[in-house]
Image 1 (cartoon, rainbow, N blue to C red):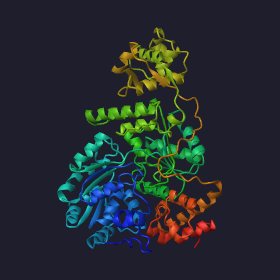
Image 2: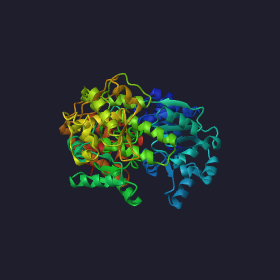
Image 3: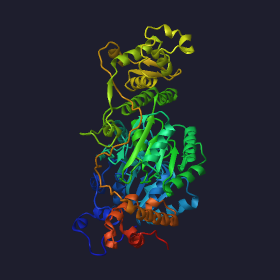
Image 4: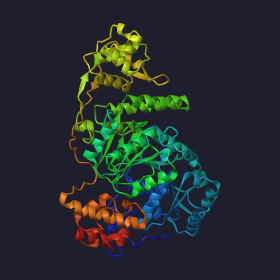
Length: 624
């Protein structure tokens, strides 16, 4: 099974590598100079045979926590992964590194599956990626029980949570692995798990003796930005043209129709955009996904069905034109940006219509009342994030159980502090209007009453006779809509989603109506202002390319694309954007110098070293 080259055939092995075989593999195989966060602790724990729950942010290197022990421990490492696309991507990346890996899932032809099983039987593989439904079949379990296993890794472990945003029913059966494979270390890994979800993972997977490693959830390279929904398509287009021209990114919409509409709208305006949702044929979805992975600068407009299986590191932005369902979903989806550690952005628009729609989804679902209560709570937490006047990253991390001591300097509320205004009297007036009109009318009608609009609907209900009719005419329609939106976000009013979206009073509003509680509202911006640069991110330094370096970067990317097409793998599997940028910054002239570049391991050095050195010397793309 051993496929690794000698640790240092040129005699340049360092003493710390001789003492630490895991570090040697990290450097020689994966091309990374040092471990990050808890990686080394997790690897040592697994090497000693311990079970673990590993929480690390997207791009934090969770996979290394089982891939390196898989190369050091005797036997086969089995990795459970929820999506076939993710299995294919990870297997392709490992093979580029010279690691013997294969996938076993339902979409393999019988002959292909038989070949993978033969390789396992003959001890030819280091890692076997398998879908949960395939692993839990009686045939596969009986087959693997007879094999020497190095470890069992359960990736995307949050899928086991029935309250989570990515629940997979097949994950519920994975608790049986403890009984069927006694003594084999098991790892559960995820980037998204608040404290209750962590407890659920440990319970359902029977990891009662597991060590929990929490590497933090902060993604300092991601800039968070949330704005009020006005004209979402125009807002998105301005964002793409001014801040991300030609970049790869994901735009999330809530429904299939809105996905198709947005993708077509962008395409008509010169943006290379493709749709992705469950209403499309499987063949078309796969074709669009392959294009997104293999081409530069594509924008994928999708429902939440897209993304978990995407290991693409150079996604520069993630945009939401509708509210996601929870903070956990928002964190997971936005985390698909900037996996390479380079600067990335998120952009979200939201409004009262989003709140009404999501609440209606919850109420009309066939789920239990307990589930609905939890979902309502999650939506309220998300609205709190949207309406926050403090650091958004701080709100996000606190929800996930992590505290920040200072503001991040890299979100919209930090870069452009939000002005607030004392809206105590306006809040009392708005709440009184909800009550006096019978707690059954929507925002538009309530605003008309407060502004004294004597239209047909107002007069048909006699609301022009109310004492408060016209008492708010000094404020604009937009201002009153903002007041009602923020009252709902703060839990002072609620939306009747069973009926027609009318507003009702919440118990928490009583102190406000009695004049016992001050209410500060955030001042909605009249127009978007240019973003200021935030403080430097807290990871590896970002290499700022000069304009004169851009042709060289283009040549390196063209070379990467050529090699990728030749091998039928995504370009980033050859080298990531961050690796190409570091090549430009360091300008290596020899293979030894190129080996020092972040992400250049021994196998890639051997396969591509001379090619990329030639591009660096000539400034021209590789041409065989």
